[in-house]
Length: 145
View 1 (cartoon, one colour):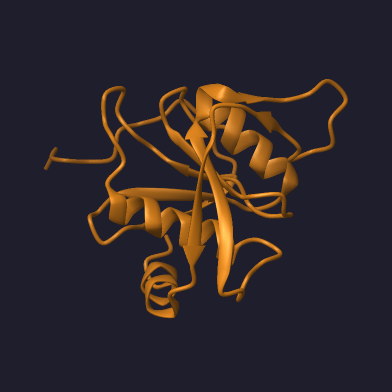
View 2 (cartoon, helix red, strand yellow):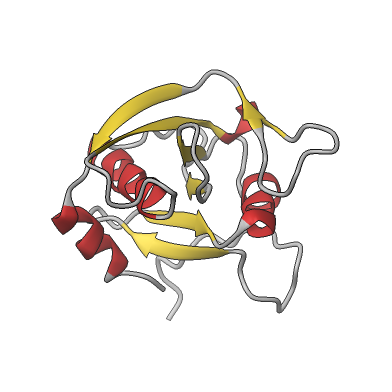
């Protein structure tokens, strides 16, 4: 019956494939990972809401990662680490032992005029030095929907 289903999100592309891969943290939180440059833009600017958490491997080519949050919700430390693991895995730093990951509320993202697909500028970021955990990424990859 009707129960705890996912919260519907407005979509710009009815019927088209989603611009992201979905993974699920151990706490049951959804984590969205952009599939490419154009999809990163779509995820970051059309799907993500202002208070969702946005992550990216700092200064590297890679996927945009979004953790959908409620307006007043704080991200759990384990969910943050899961999202960092995905940001690193889907970046040019995949496999490196330590990678800096920037994270911030999506409302601080900007798309510069004439910027290439997937290119963004942001402010108010925090940075986490993520140390690679093979077990964590293996668990996350097994949850892909």
